Amino acid sequence: MGAVICDASFHARRRYRSTVRPRLLRLQSAWPDAVTVRGFQARITTEDLAVAMDFNAPGRVATAHAVTALLVARGVDTRDDLHEWLGLPGSRAALRTVRGVGPKSVDYIGNLVGRSQVAVDVHLRAFAVDAGVVGLGYEELQAAYEESAAVLGHDPGALEHAVWRFKSQEGT
Image (cartoon, rainbow, N blue to C red; front, side, top):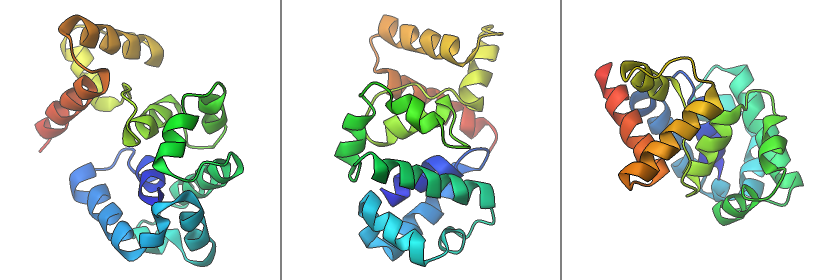
């Protein structure tokens, strides 16, 4: 769960494969007890998350701490707990109260714990623009991707990931 929280907190506007993923893998190896939210909370209470993640990003560290505190307060400890909790009324709104957590982060967290959601980011926006779809807000563009997935007979999260992978490789 520590890796899920850090992934959601640290990934924005960073190269995932070369910057974020290696740090998450090191964190999982160094902090095996952070497999639960409570285990992660115990670690970040006594150790510096910025040092563990090798990220000098105080705002992102603060987001990770706040998400952790929120999940602990809501009784969420495991991936399964988080998967279930995200389906409850008010869970999205609760996460959105955390500074640094927007609708994309909430949907991304859902994907990380096995919910099939479309998390609209810069890559999905660019793909839509390339297709002539412009001027849509987050929820409208998300609905367009979800409808496209349904028409094509694809899982929404799988379509989102395929578009993300395609667009993210264009820059490399």
